[in-house]
Length: 175
Image (cartoon, rainbow, N blue to C red; front, side, top):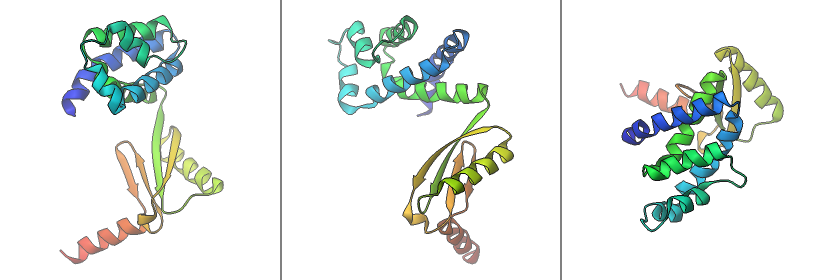
């Protein structure tokens, strides 16, 4: 995994730089996300390694409709260098660079039960105060948490779930 990230980082950085200079980070983000989803498909993954697949065909396969020349050129460069399989990592790193530049924290909130809109708004506001940045929230439900929620915001994980509290209590009692 670390080797693929090491290989993907310069491509992601170059893509982000071009996108930022042209003021099209949103467009690039969508195009790379599409290409990454297609490249991650097991059927396509096997096809990308096939030497009979031409560079142009690989670019056409991974390009969203009406893709600009810069994105097509970038995908062509990946095809030429045999790096198409890195697209999921490249897209992920691109999003990290974009979030850092735009000072956005992406948080995943997993709760034991679906959260109401008011609860989600309150939690998002609290996260904005804590991080001092805009927060983009993705939600999920995991009934095994029993109650509460787990917030994963990059380097910060806040486990306020009943399951987590029980695990910490068990660890304290067994020491």
